[in-house]
Length: 185
Image (cartoon, rainbow, N blue to C red; front, side, top):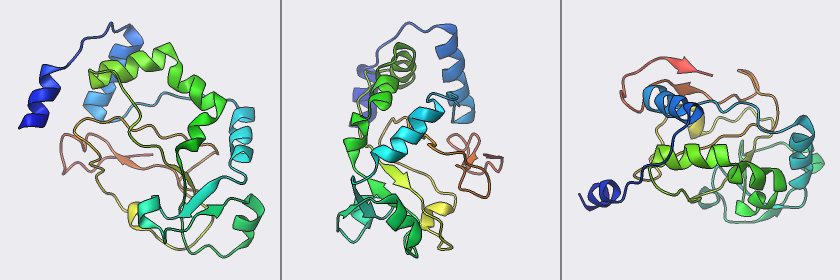
């Protein structure tokens, strides 16, 4: 098809250091790579405060919401009975300086470009705030994201997460085998 023809025709080779080679091997083998802790506790707390008064939609993505913008107020959200387990924020969050630093870090840039084999660009930015709720959303079940022909998703947890507080679950190697049943948290 035309997409794969253009993709393979325009691939670039990047200089890969050991870190990048190991990360790409893990991405190819497992379907994920844990970069590790990239933000300090202070930066995580600052980000949570950064969200105050920012626009959000009640839904996993704005297109799946009621279409109404809301202004985020942490106390108000936490004190209401939440009918939506996801509040999604718009791309303005990438103006937060620590995120800008993360995205411009040479080590990360080399990894992103080397894995994708082209100069990466942001396709979509969605920040979720997940207030406590007993409501289950369809994305709480295992599913496959098919956002584009070749993508790299970055998930950042701004608070500590575990099995009971909403940790990301991933089925290892599911990108290569849809019948894989090994779960990673």
